[in-house]
Length: 158
Ligand SMILES: [Zn+2]
Ligand SMILES: [Zn+2]
Image (cartoon, rainbow, N blue to C red; front, side, top):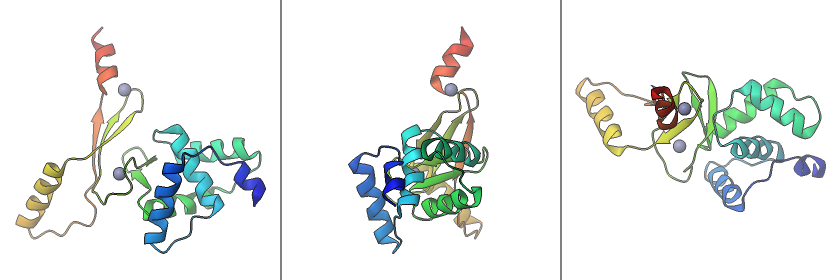
């Protein structure tokens, strides 16, 4: 166990506290293995595929890791609201404000892969009004907008 902990990416106390808080709220336990996956994602601060994540963890821990294990940990992190799953790119992104309940909206750059998590209560309200008018009950209202980020859009112009 101690060996595993030592092979966890450095994690700021703030994020560790946040993660522990989310887990406690959900009655879940933040095991060293779960924490290692979360820390690895935070160290990147960008969306990663499960495949890429497994590679990063294997490199850090210098051992083979069963993909199924990582998928299970990812499910856990999503369940606790620490990580978002991006449907359109099949990647995972650590939430930058997991302490607040929120629907998710993302701007995905198709050039550099940058993902910006934005929060618009206006958009949330609009979506829920549209659903309401149709008697539709949404259980998942993730909005993913693909395009070019500011930096890539400028580069494209040159
Ligand atoms: Zn979020
Ligand atoms: Zn970009």
